[in-house]
Image 1 (cartoon, rainbow, N blue to C red):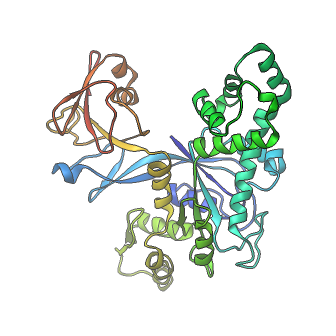
Image 2 (image 1 turned 30 degrees about the vertical axis):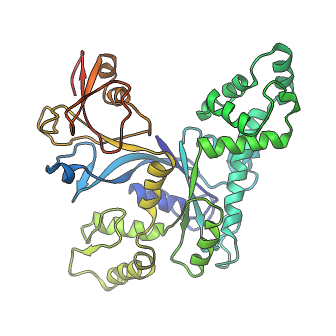
Image 3 (image 1 turned 90 degrees about the vertical axis):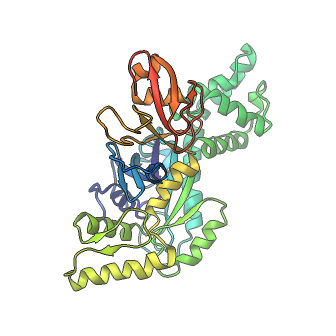
Length: 400
């Protein structure tokens, strides 16, 4: 699974990405600092099963700190989108195309209202972030509309004349976006469009259709960035009226905490609501910076919001689950004795054989059954996984 970070220019997307991944990317106070997409690994934060199972774990593919498991997940940060991006303005078509593989979107907005629709600095509070949300979503919709609208009248007439499926035609056009026939058929039925009379569909019908595609295939939440600036709280409340998930966010604060932790100045786990000073001889500037983060961000909001946005994107929007494969279900270990060594992030609805395929294709090909480590019972290939499951896969080719 891949989560994309989107928004207009100069709202703090690259700062958000850098804070989430600790990857150095260009960050500056002007539009279009990001030109090429930034790919990186953030972390998904979840309660580890180690304490529940009464074991001391030894993770290999992730990190566990006092029962908090941090699991690497993929993030992509694309350049800022402006009005007209869907028509190629500001290399918008290229930037939108880079979001094809994203399963969900974190929409970073400037909650301070301090950047105009082009991403230029303006007086704080003079821009409405709700309009920024609408603009970016509209550009996403227009982009998809451009994909399905090409030669639409000809395609619609041909489908009617030959009796072919317009749903199959749309699925072919949108295959690169991960939108299948089932999703298209469901949207068509929901909007009460006539699949046998596509030539009668209006442009507004098509627009409603792509909006439905976006909401189901590219679900999004709002990271209300710069939440620590004056007046941001009021605009965050206004954003909440959009009925989207809105997470107050201060990406600069998170980046500061992550850097300070990296240099052993503080003890801090991403997503925590507090930090502990680890080095007593901090400079006055360092002490003041940390105090401001506490007063302006952690105290009023409980966290910086960066980790919370990532967690919500995966667990909330994508209904992801975390599963722990082991080779010895009694010791919860791999063949080398590592306890709960791996934690895999899976799509909701994944099955035991899906987990086998994630580990190794040969394991899935020779799948016999799996063993639930909690109950000791055998489960079939079609067994639906639950968050926190611990499974041993038994295969005719190899075991895990």
